[in-house]
Length: 335
Ligand SMILES: Nc1ncnc2c1ncn2[C@@H]1O[C@H](COP(=O)(O)OP(=O)(O)OP(=O)(O)O)[C@@H](O)[C@H]1O
Ligand SMILES: [Mg+2]
Image 1: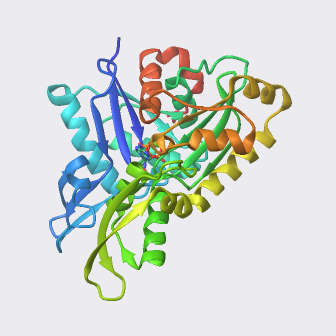
Image 2: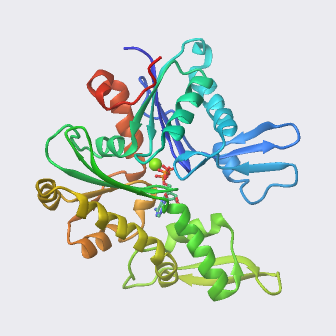
């Protein structure tokens, strides 16, 4: 079997597989750069731990934003490091690369992904629409004539798609995902409790005590930050209800999009979706009670995939392994 690489190029996380291994890289897509030397000093977890803490002269940032390349140069630097790790002595070998692309990506955004793959030594980039990859990884037969609906709540965006016969019939993509939840929590804590908390603290709050709906038994967590007036360090206890209130506007935007996709779906496929239910994938889809809330507001049964964070790369791995079977679903640049 030819040596191929598969990449889930996420806004917050990058996951890479090869034809030999299911997961060779699973890291935050963060790069730390020494600004004066224009040199990468760290990538992945190490760079993420520097976010919001870098001294002057160092900068840590996400090279991708809302699912698309925000900085071509930094994305290239990050991929170069991972490609060197993966290929090692085989680096003269130019692998074909299957990489996901948001369903709503523009032609310029698609071109940037193809260019960056070629720039880091990929022979050819095969773009695979994210919802197709995520559905495959969630165990859905995407080639079936029955309608299936997936909701990928990622870090930078939520993509909702109805799939039938190997392609996407209706979709919506909104720039609301896990990062927006974190921002909403930080905003709420600043306004309601006059406490400024960092991005990573807000993310911890979301994961540890967050929920899409109120819980019978409140979870609690102590957070620290600085007082908006005095500027001095301060701590307070947050409860689940704080998170429910904080993220409500973001959740509502996602619900609105889910409803729009359901309204745009042809009746035959709607009835399939009613029978089979919608499947939630993506890291931010792990939010407590998100599936329950969606079921309640749409009336369509909704369930979470087994490993929501890993569905997209699992689907890409299937496409890497059964490349010819999926060739009609790929988008590539003909030369
Ligand atoms: N248990 C959890 N509860 C709530 N949110 C979670 C949990 N685990 C991870 N997340 C969130 O999932 C998000 C990352 O998801 P994922 O890895 O699917 O994003 P991504 O693929 O990089 O982004 P995108 O698909 O939007 O480009 C982060 O915002 C993270 O905080
Ligand atoms: Mg993703």
